[in-house]
Image 1 (tube, helix red, strand yellow):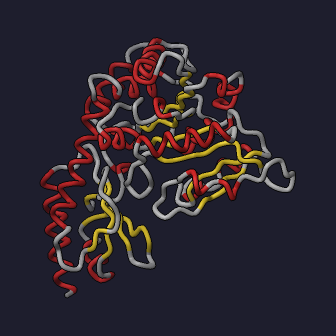
Image 2 (cartoon, rainbow, N blue to C red):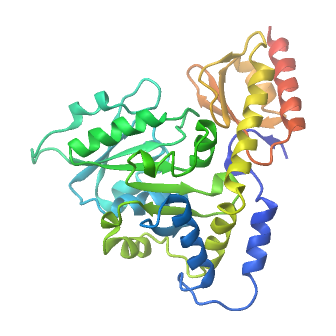
Image 3 (cartoon, rainbow, N blue to C red):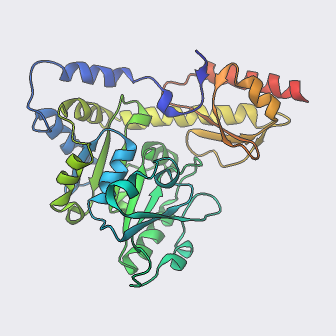
Length: 344
């Protein structure tokens, strides 16, 4: 099988997470979250994000985003998100189908929303338009960049002024927090984020995400029912909870993400000076974007699996993860250099 630089979804499960699953697999436990593992995991999230945090677990990122937003959106309300957002491009209209609420894609220059992008989409109380209720941003972004703390604060301030809720898709929040040199809370709740979809699958877990309401009033009475209706309430919840508890223990979230980010930096350092390779975006987390010759892309793809992100350029995305080794990176970089020179 070709080695993968396509996505951190392709990574194996971290050994400590496997061990947490094995430890949870001893004997019986009450289902649907009424178990000791879930209680410990919820408390772990509150240690990281604040005692008032309301926590609900989900199987995957799409489920977490949909359940989080559907807990407070009404069908005539909408979410403002970059047109590149996973919520808009890669979730198959899940929010619209499940909630009846619309995602309004906002054009941005680099995949990051800014307060100045939003006023044209605020239509007051005109019944002919869906009413914006939330802003959704991804941290890290789909282009591997990060929102600086002041960026998020500015969006949160704009949201407060216009009665909007700030949702953060944190599928790669750990990578962003490491890149920013801050904590998970410091990259989200402390900046004015109201609701977070916290990612585990891309950072060493088999599966599992968490919905964190930093304003419990947004969860209200609806969140547990939405969790069930959206098919995110696991009967054997302990297996999701045990993984997330382990991830947030002993600094594992940071170690896994730090390694992934470091491997992307190593790849960037190896390929940036290769004639014919042009790095197209800032390398902040665990993704490297580049343009190169189509023929070289095809030849590299025979040995390594990766994605062509934009066929028109063409622009590729090379991603690293917690288990990527220095040897993997060096072999991949050598292959890139060899095949690019072969196209010259």
